[in-house]
Image (cartoon, rainbow, N blue to C red; front, top):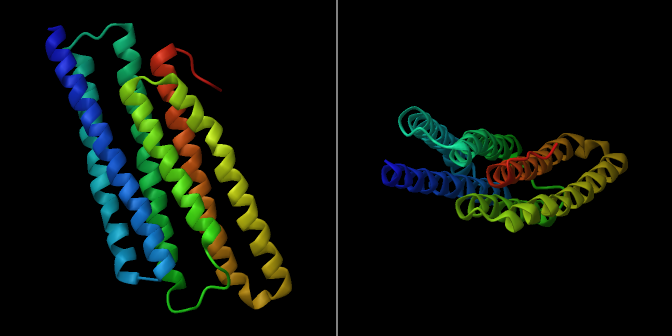
Length: 214
């Protein structure tokens, strides 16, 4: 019985890694479409959200199956419960990647009022956080989970830079206001992705220690 549980747990971990990979690609595609103002690529990024939603349901079903058929002990319960919580945050990250692509479509055809280097850096940092949080879960790596939580400050600092730059630009030229607001929303979505990655790592810590950070 325990061998069967371990096999299904390995399957759960593999499915979690697959969902993480899908979301990582969604963020990368969304930012690539944004920078290049590539509307066709943006549309593909939006369509990819359906596959992420499907993967969430597959993992949810697997977790419920583990609960119902394998009689998990306390540590197992935490592991499975954490996965259920994590995929909610992961699905929302996918939503935000799609939201960024929706904004890309809105801004298509108009040159950007500023360079997007800080937004691109935000995307890179959130991907690092996402990948590390999934690795922390699969490997029960408490240290890595804590490092993801600490890394959220980097994303928040970048968001503040983008926000302050855009507010200054609006004050200097009100005609730039609409696009500045759209770019600020892009940065806000990335900041939220960082928050969701932090949430994921907090659930990883719960799965390891049994304690949840408020």
